[in-house]
Amino acid sequence: MADQEQQNAFMGEGTKRTRGRDAQRMNILIARAVAQAVKSTLGPKGMDKMIVDDMGEVTISNDGATILTEMAIEHPVGKMMVDVAKTQDEEVGDGTTTAVILAGTFLEKAEKLLDDSIHPSIIVNGYMMAATKAKEFYRETADDVKPDDKKTLRIIALTSITGKSAESAEELADLVVDAVTSVVDNEGTKMIINEDNIKLEKKNGGSLKDTQLISGIVIDKEIVHTGMPRSVTNAKIALLDLALEVREPESDAKIEINTPEQLQAFIDTEEKQLKGMVESVKKAGANVVITQKGIDDLAQHYLAKEGIIAVRRVKKSDMDALARATGASVVTSMKELSSKDLGFAGKVLEKKVAGDPMVFVEQCKNPKSVSILIRGGTQHVVDEAERALVDAIGSVSSAIEMGKVLVGAGSCEAEVAVKLRDYAKTIGGREQLAIEAFAESLEVIPRTLAETAGMDPIDALVTLRSAHSKKDGKYFGVNVFKGRVEDMKNARCLEPLQVKTQAIDSASEVAEMILRIDDIILGSSKGKMPQMPPGGMGGGMDM
Ligand SMILES: Nc1ncnc2c1ncn2[C@@H]1O[C@H](COP(=O)(O)OP(=O)(O)OP(=O)(O)O)[C@@H](O)[C@H]1O
Ligand SMILES: [Mg+2]
Image (spheres, rainbow, N blue to C red):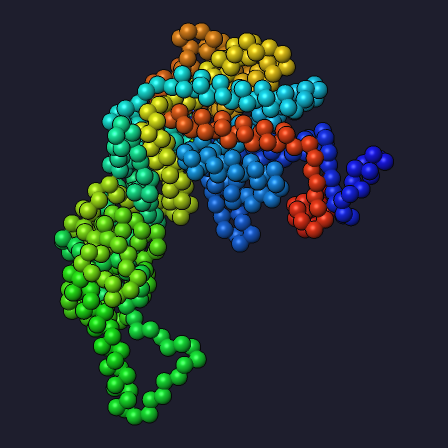
């Protein structure tokens, strides 16, 4: 105790400090709890989570990153785990649950080694060696996939989607493959996919089966005036970031109008201004105006008289998508608008979707610009379908860009675990134990999949290990639908290599970082520990 006081002597009052094994134990506990929170959602037989935020907003999801973000985790170590999911989400899109479960398991196994008095730096070292090797082994295990191999790409999309609770997986998988393959760019020998060129638009109503791919951009807005045409071909589109309105006087400015003549003169100037704006649009040669801001009734009337279609209050992200698709540049001042700024689309039209009008901008100048209009019975269905599509788009894009694909269902993890154990033997010493712990951690994926399928996880692992130690057992995995371990090569479960290597990267890095911490100092003014909810378990987490 005296020792403790001496250690804390230089710190201010109210500072809390936890050191050594206690600090490690605490951090590992929290990291594991976060991993545990998403574990049951893994795979096609995984369960969903319902999260209700403090505003009563409900999210139902099976997506690791979504669940953890919605959970509003406050503990710094918990946040590091959430970042693992976020990084995975940003880098690939899919595999967020896998990454978090792996991180939690790396730490769980490390704790056992710590209990056996193995120094954290030895564990970290062993884990770093194991991570590098694991990525190599994943690469070796992976098969090639060609960008025009739609059959394989479709299975990759399907694997991503069946991990979610979305139905109509087959239809959605087709859409994803069509969407991604239509926006691929060849840069020399490299394939590049800009996922921004695939716009997702959601509309409640109908069923998931009605979800469709549109070559072009869909905007959830209507054509502003009934007098305007509902469609136009050879559209020349002006994109404006300005209001076609007469500017309101400053709030404290007054305009004094005393006579009817003055009033008329005032109205006339307003009209003139609006007419001038419409004139500029016409002069530039546009037959479609899309603006981020408002359009005055009178301006609408003048535009309608000129046969120009107008859409107002369009989101910034939609404006950007339109600019990319049509080649238009967004103009912020009416004076600057010229024919050079206009974009082009073969067709602009308004169509009713679920009773609401939406504007479709089709046959765009840049054909590598598509939209997926997501339909579904309820908001929750549409939202989860969107998450499934985002993951699948990420997976298919990654498979095309890297050209490598792995058999999922825990098969690639089991294969890499076997290879890692062989590698560990060549290292020897205490690092060997850490590498073996890393290998065992990878097996958490098949083990969890087996659990979700109601199988005995130990039996499943024993069968898997023995299969993978044989020559022809490379593709053995957990068939969650049949509840048995078997060759999954032709079982329609494929994942891009990057999902696995990225998960290894972010999960092992966070585990190493957490293992290196042996001192938690909480200043009295900053870094408050998260408190239990009021009336909860009483008091904060005492360190
Ligand atoms: N048909 C299948 N049979 C067995 N396992 C499958 C099948 N389809 C997918 N899987 C496995 O399910 C796991 C993926 O599950 P899931 O999609 O729930 O989590 P994730 O991809 O790690 O994270 P995210 O929440 O971001 O999707 C992978 O290990 C994958 O191989
Ligand atoms: Mg997934």
